[in-house]
Amino acid sequence: MTDLQVIIPLAGEGSRFKSYRNSEFVYDVDIPKPLLPIRGKTMIERVIDSIGIQGTYIFVVRSAKLMGNQEQYDRLIENITKATPYKHHIVPVDNMMNGTAMSCYAAKRLINPNKPLISFNCDQIFHWNQDYINNMLLFFNNYDHDASVLTTTTKNPTYSFVKTINDINSNQIATKFAEKKIISDQGLVGVHYWRKASFLWRSIPDIYIKRPFIGDNCGGFNHYLPELYISQTLNYMLENELRITTYNLPSTDYTVIGIPSELNNYIDKHYNNDIKLLILDIDGVLTTGRKLYNRNGNVDYKEFNDKDWTAIKRFISSGIKVIGLTGDLNINSNVFKNRLIPIYGCRTDGKHLDKADFIPVFEREYSISRKSFAFIGDDYFDLGMMKGLSNTFCPADAPMDVKSSVRKVMSRNGGNGVIAELFDYLVYNNEVNKNIDTKDVYLLDIKEKF
Image 1 (cartoon, rainbow, N blue to C red):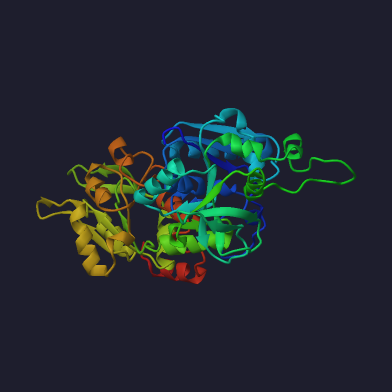
Image 2 (cartoon, helix red, strand yellow; image 1 turned 135 degrees about the horizontal axis):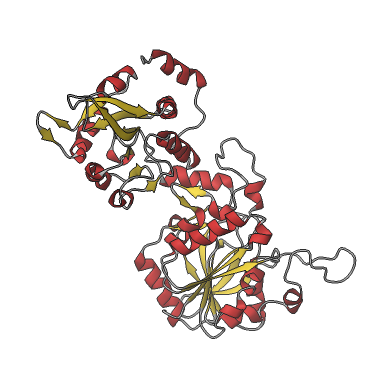
């Protein structure tokens, strides 16, 4: 189905996140919902990554004017562009659209009415495999129907529902849809398919086309239209004797992350390999990389940043083990011992070991899986470690081959508080517990010798 058009409306306000004040929700509630971070990527990146369907994508977004923040709008466009491997269009709207159906309608000019269209919610992440996708698209393309919806077995009242009958081939044919009302055990997942996009446009009542925005008065004092959901347009299709089928999606094959508690639960379930061991390269990371040599050619001086030592104490107080791994134990060894931080040398006794050789050593010594390791390095000799681990980082002034090998390039240079920035980044991504006891940090500080 190379002619498939995929639309993702994300022009809503995300009010359920904005109004959330539970202390367990770690994110800044002023961040637009599609930009909320999920383990190093934004929500919209995770959603797009999970769909895995080839086609022309259309995103309906709030404009910079409607957002009230040009920087956030630019970030959203950048994230969409980065995450979408296929041809795509972005449709900014200056007014709040009156429901998801009208958000889709805002992109009508870019959609071929005679080609198939499929819509996805912007707050669902799919765990389906390619076989499921292929079979689903085969059903959409070959079956005698005008539209189809994905359903799952549920009685959760937050879903919309469909009542069905069996046809002669035992396929489920829709007879009625209900928004947030249980009329069967088949809940709508939020994926809708139309054999022709024009079927969606024809099922939107004229009164909504004339008044597509929230707040449009439709006659009379304070007489406003309710939001129009896609499930409601499906009933209009049934009234016009169009044929709609259902296709089952197991509940284990997707996750709804529409409210903060759902997002937190998703992170807990799918990203449970929390960082437990932080491995630090030293020269060029904790230091600027500059060294002062004496007349004998020995190093007398290196420059560290106190903010990094504080960040290390905060890492330790949050429950993360921190160790150093260096090719230069001269100075570094005493500095780390005075700070009570274990340190390992990869260049000793005339040998220069690949730092990746220490991965199984650290697994045995600390009884921690490499999946829970994090490493930050800055130079060529760190590449082996970076290829062996998933949670890898580097300073902004690292060489290009290092930058291209890590999960995240920090914005600060080595020796300029890059570990402090890493702590903030991991807290922001909910990978480090920010609710640490200040007394623990002070106690670690008192024990140090410097």
